[in-house]
Length: 300
Image 1 (cartoon, rainbow, N blue to C red):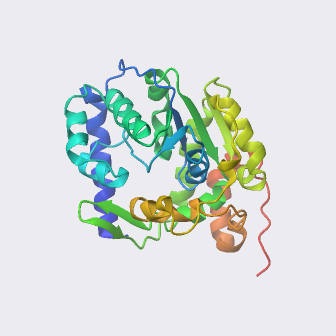
Image 2: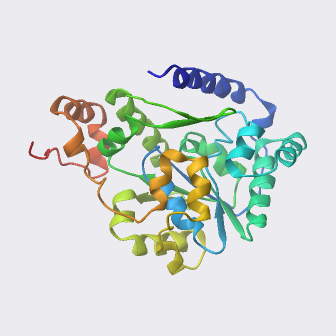
């Protein structure tokens, strides 16, 4: 495994340990922002949905902040979001909790963009969904769900780059399929535990790709916004959105392009028989519960 990525994982675990004991993340903090959180297992279509929502004239969103699962680094946050480092540091220094900081920081980003509401897209925030539901009582939460075998194929070589203070560091990962499918089971189950909650909605990646307008109309109804045809328009190459995202989230740039179904069922091409059997052993019950029952591979 890439040494830089290994060190990053260890740092994240240490940060998570610190956060659990930090007054900055105490559970009594509340924001009344009518925000939207996009959560789920990584590589499940969260960036695609975010790109669609961001094309709505009232909704603003930015790259993954990880504000509630990692210690906030004002330098990295400012670099990713294109905000002034001095202002970010000042906001962080004068915020008593992470909830207050997120409310102020994302709210300011939305206002600067001329948008009324902010959308936060960090898939791993699904792990702290109970905390977020309590801390943001007016927010809506959308969990993206995708066939775990396809997710495992995508996670195998993801992320393709890491953001450090030195800039974007390319990665060449080959994560074990067992680790990838286990992550899908854990993260997906964390969100499904709140299925039926009035402020939590599950959206299937396959349906979003196959019938984008119908799904987006349903999502807009859920978050209390009017559906806008602009949400279906792909960003054009060379646009300011694409250029900014190329620096902020190079691994997810394809999510801002035209929707296509090429990645649906990729496990039939990418997984060996042994890897497929492993996925079914470890993720079979959840795959079956979600209706992903086929085990037929593509002809070689």
